[in-house]
Length: 443
Image (cartoon, rainbow, N blue to C red; front, side, top):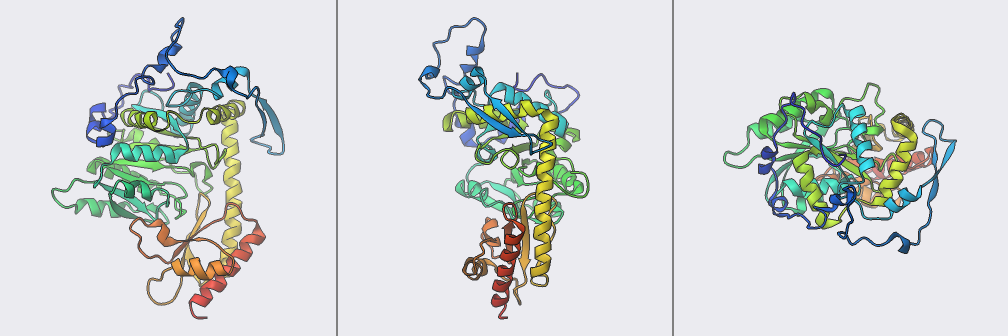
């Protein structure tokens, strides 16, 4: 079945389901099965006449056909017309399983086998959600109780901090540099952890092209983090929306999810994949791959929160993927990655022209962000007032670094996105920012 892991591979010593009982939050443990959704799969039994679900009759829907065109993954100048079959349309317009439609689940399992070297039968399962952020929130609430300590890389995506803050977590910030999250920070923190205080159950990290840092964790850092997870018994939440936007000069290092297969006890990585950056941001399609017990707890959240991911978006996604095939999908992602590399190069060149001596930065190898530190004179500096007032007054908008620190420290850093602008706009934006920095320095 596509919605559940197949029989366990006896050669892998994965963590047992019982291990996760101590990791689940009170909220996750208190959730009860939905009396309808828990038996909905029985409708697929051959010969069954179902009086079960309150599905609206498809003849009452106004949509009678749906067609669209897609770019060729190799030659984007070429387009292919796609017409949904009547069966596909009826599926798209109807309720579906909470984990996602079966054919798309099977596609995702196949993708993880190709790209992550992970197969069914290794103690993990996949579920789809309305974007990866939907799934990350469900994972956090399935694992974390109010007051729990959590490890969070900083700077961190501003949309993630509120998840932990709303639960009133003790957020332990872990620094990131050009080589990714600092494993030495985690080791020092946990080796000196207060006696009697429960250690963090989770670490949140973005391994490729972090938002906002742009950093990609080296293989050495990843292996160290995996070992620390084993020694100090925490779950890694691997948020990876920029996996397919890697354009570094060396081969992409393996993900945590791929690497943990060869660890002593696999089962400490929950991986989040997003199609927002490579297919459509507005369709909100993402999927999670992780220990079956934890993903099932997330599915239970979906049942009471939004029933299921968007069926129409899933059918459209599947229509594209089946026509492209895995080779076509990967060719498309390679082209997308090179598109953003070219954008990075344009932005980097403009940074050198306008901000040399006024800012410091590392060149990202993935993603769509430049993270740079303003040289504002004496002291550590704070970019907040400069960005919100002087830069804005000159007609350029960016985000001050303080927005990316959960504990709201001051920061001299700025995040700039290079995904949308043309070369002339980039040049003018950084020229305006240069003027704002010079004014702030008293020049």
